[in-house]
Image 1 (cartoon, one colour):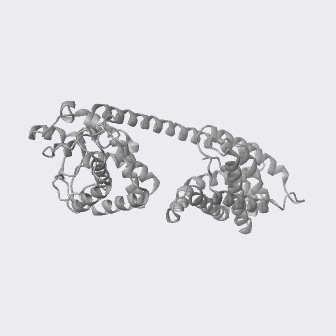
Image 2 (cartoon, helix red, strand yellow):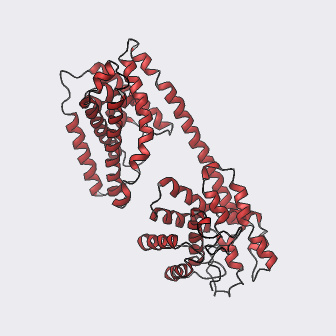
Length: 441
């Protein structure tokens, strides 16, 4: 983003200054430049390839430097890769400086821990299994520094609340960095062996294959997301009265999930659940979706099949996870009177309870061609009234808090045409079509 807050710029400047202090002992008479330069160039090349291929970052070479070099020299290895790697978002110079400072500080701290625990001698010996102890401690230090710095920039630049800025960052980074650390340790041991640097480079081959597979996974995920967008667009075209409804339910579901403190992966899954919750309407005759007036009992039974239709459509998309259960069960009620299976209480999957609240809230606060939107305060009051019978009170409370903090700004969803006077309730038919609160006026 172009408009980086002043406090975030000060934070970055502080990190850059700290990084320069870590590098200040260079150059020194004991600096092993014959190791530093090859590792720095190799890391820069690997980092550039990794980022251009959208596979994240490449830490094995950087961590090999941590295991082979004194702290200032290990920190220097990070500089070329951080300063020369591609940057797509602006301001590029500030982002490069931040990345360079972040990796320099993390590498310095990791090397300091490794050096203090005698890791350099253990690698040179090599002394197995003791060599794993200082290497593991160095990986933990590396992740800890990245976590502290990342959380700070989230809080200052992206204005993420402090209580959420650092949540989960360490544990999400630990597993991949640990894998890269093992590869870096293998590189370090081979580099000092009689086989030399050429053998060490062979470690990068399996890492390259793994990175390629990771990139393929992301391409497949992008294809799935494109499929999801196509399905949602098809629903919007078929049921013009609720155009945009799916995207807003996805946004409300995400707000609830974040308020509940769920991790980022589950937040994204629940967003998908909200977006896809009505995809089963593709299997419902259009004349029923657009019917004016009450639905007959038979027509209502047909409408109530849409969760099962939707579940059949998405059951093969594996990465959706618990979102599939939300598609199937988002019309269940806590008192057991919902559909399609009449589940009650904790039998209803958590994801479905989240989407049910988000769905009803948007249905009540959106202007349709046949009814005006209720004020947000009225919709909130209705959700509270139905909490415990129809909706999970915990999900209702989370939505209320999220809306109070961030606001809610729905838009007209039926061709942009201003609504006329509200029509009388259609015997529950509109609720069945749009997911509004059952029995609400």
